[in-house]
Image 1 (cartoon, rainbow, N blue to C red):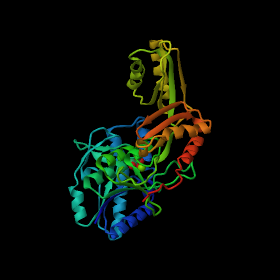
Image 2: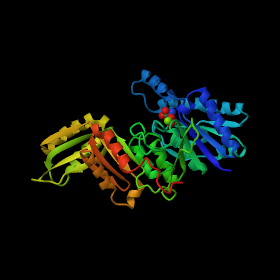
Image 3: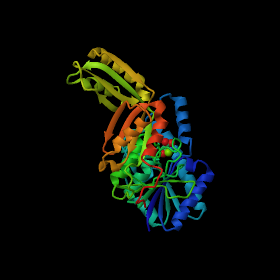
Image 4: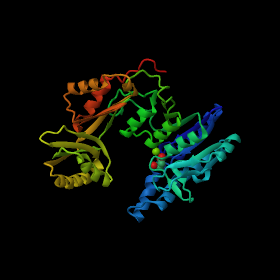
Length: 410
Ligand code: ASP
Ligand code: MG
């Protein structure tokens, strides 16, 4: 008998009918002989509704009381699902995060899980019950309710699967898997059978919002086989797993992109030790995260320095840069928000040369100018003008033949 942890997101439990469907699915899996722990999100829109209530009282609602409020959304769903299971003759128990000791730190609204006491869940499973656990919430050492950040139910599910040493953690959602790229941009995008944790992290951090990033990190760290699949259709979904188990021969797993960044340049700064720190120190102090960084080779004892930040931080970063610029005696500060980042992602890059040149050749053929380049072991990213985003993604998807099933796929 295998143990499965299933997670159903807001859309999948958005109405009582859908909750009934989830109960039917749980029954089918139990009928096939699996022991089942279910993690649920709040009904779709509920967390936003609660946030709206909080903000009507306190514009910048945050902290302890916000968590008390937001955690109620999931409490509704666990009760309804357990009722639906009981109505089908399936013994079930629902638990809040605190009741199964999902202990977190005290960082309200973005807490991290520290430990889980699985003995209660195990004894329910041993007694033949289905266990239903509220996602997104925990309890700190003082007993205060905490939440894990938006989308946190994914992390609850993975953490429970790790604690219980489950055979698989299945994330049921409104898409039927992870795709080679966004199907809204490339019609021929293909669902991947498998992808590695690392590739998934790169794809997710670049805006493929299928899973909360932290849940993928967690799954990779504890080696929890993670499957993303549709709660509305039957199908195998996409298995996220280790590199050893990834049988696909493709060099590239997918093309990710991101339109949420802006570019800033400070020109004509002195080419001397400490300059990068003089520029990026104040940016970090302003709590602005920097993504790509490029510094030119100096000429005439001066150099140019370019980096990207999230668009939300653009104004703030420009302000900081203005100040830095006068201290450093820089020639000019410039910025651009009309940019897009496109990345080719794949663990195959580790052992194969030529991916980068194929990427650059493809973009050149489409006359797309590359503004910045950065690489990691399994990713090559370029920044281009925003207007070339779709053209670039389509051309790359084509060039790496991602619409075709690679040989050796299971
Ligand atoms: N209900 C929470 C949210 O909307 C957690 C989740 O859905 O995973 O962010
Ligand atoms: Mg969600």
